[in-house]
Length: 175
Length: 152
Image (cartoon, rainbow over all chains, first blue to last red; front, side, top):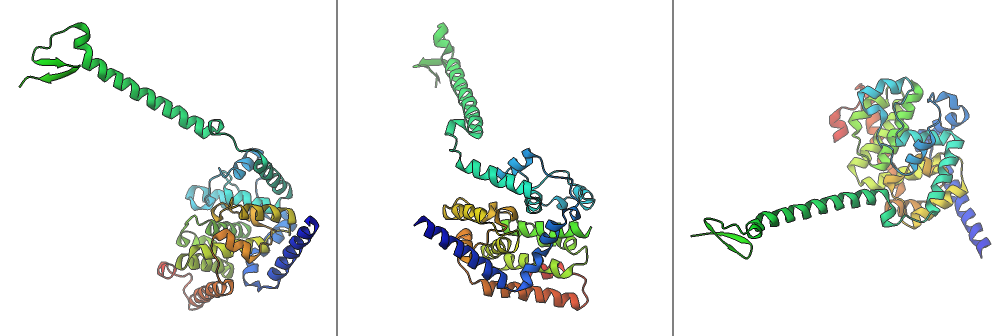
């Protein structure tokens, strides 16, 4: 049964490939450069491979998703073949011509997928959120206690408020 | 220089698929800086078609192109991607060349990925029509479609 599934999958894969290859070259032309780059990676004068940290940030979707050349200050660097920082598109395009980066990305991505998801309290963003909410709650409680103390202090020290009646902790003005 | 502009065109194409809403007017001059007007016009035609019609359809079309026209066919990568699509763990906004390359997705998978089905032939014709209009305008003497042409 599993063998049959595999064979169907392979058939589907090959038929998709065949169907795509028989289509017109109008759109295919847009991607011909990839093959040239693959054969001659030196044509793409990049400053080496991205670091492991960058690749992991790419997998986690934490890299900036913008065009490096859209900012004037980066544009000249870009034309000179230097990139001040890796963007999502740059890593993605680099991985297409660099087999080792491509394999690393695929392996780490699949590994990350297999790992059980962290529990609510284990996720860093939750810890931060919890921390913030804890501080907020503490501040709110402090303010309430302070108001209560301010409201009740005359009762506590037995002080007679000159122009008010102290009734059940609240100060009422005489009419 | 030539290589970098080609890189910029491809990166822009990926941005169109992810729908990051980079206006075509902003990059149009850069995309044809190396004199490859035909290629630049094709990417611009895709961006205009996305703006004029249903964005998801053009994004789906691009996902199909990336998946079938880039990279060496890779069955393992395809298996992983299809699993992600079928479990609805992957969206077009998270896709990239690297993810799609060599996966040879069928149209059914692309429809599933973009959340709707469409007629690919008709959409491709629509893009080609926009491309022809842009090229005709270029032939008439204007060096580049004006902002009004791009906006209309």
